[in-house]
Amino acid sequence: DADVTQTPRNRITKTGKRIMLECSQTKGHDRMYWYRQDPGLGLRLIYYSFDVKDINKGEISDGYSVSRQAQAKFSLSLESAIPNQTALYFCATSTGSNYGYTFGSGTRLTVV
Amino acid sequence: QKEVEQDPGPLSVPEGAIVSLNCTYSNSAFQYFMWYRQYSRKGPELLMYTYSSGNKEDGRFTAQVDKSSKYISLFIRDSQPSDSATYLCAMSAPSGAGSYQLTFGKGTKLSVIP
Image 1 (tube, rainbow over the protein chains, first blue to last red):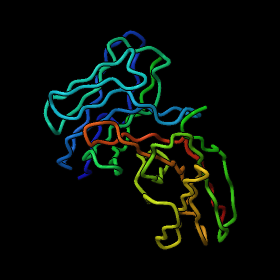
Image 2 (cartoon, rainbow over the protein chains, first blue to last red; image 1 turned 90 degrees about the horizontal axis):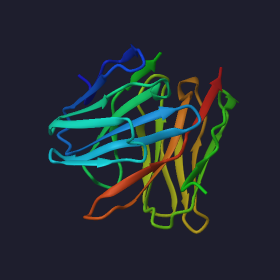
Image 3 (cartoon, one colour; image 1 turned 30 degrees about the vertical axis):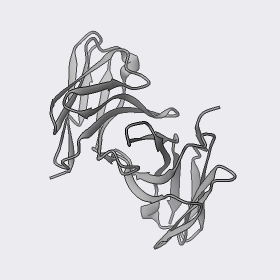
Image 4 (cartoon, rainbow over the protein chains, first blue to last red; image 1 turned 180 degrees about the vertical axis):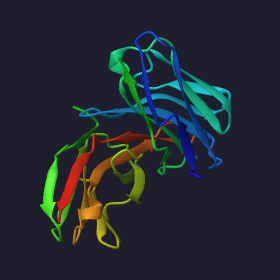
């Protein structure tokens, strides 16, 4: 099994719908992150969490919310999806050391 | 000016060529320098990391850091079609309480043609 598992792998949803992307990890890492990746814009940080009780906004948190249900689970929600949220979403984990994020395989989200 | 600049390419080379990928940065607080490789429809995976200025070699890959010029490079020797991927540079700086935060370049898409 993968160290960082994201579900679903692909999702098409309609404008205005609520959608949740899920991430679970077996690395035992305390820190978890949500990024989105867009062509020409690279990886942009949405939210991050250093432990279950710690949630922090990244550079593009508007329109998103997160929940850290357990050390191993970190979910990202789009309360009311809009087309410009169409992107590839990645979950990542780390120990908080100076390098070495472990990424999931991503969720390709399309909002129509 | 963005903290990390990386030419997005795309870069296309024949099999066996030497590939040079580069990033520049502006933040002097960056201490650790990494290269990630991302295959199509996969997440980025850590390829190499280095701390000090100089070279670090791992098989066909060499990472080079020049802190005085704020410039890092990744060289791939004897490039193979399996090296075709997007390569992202990343750098980390202390962000308080003994932790580090990563800043990524936008990635360079490399194609190695058989």
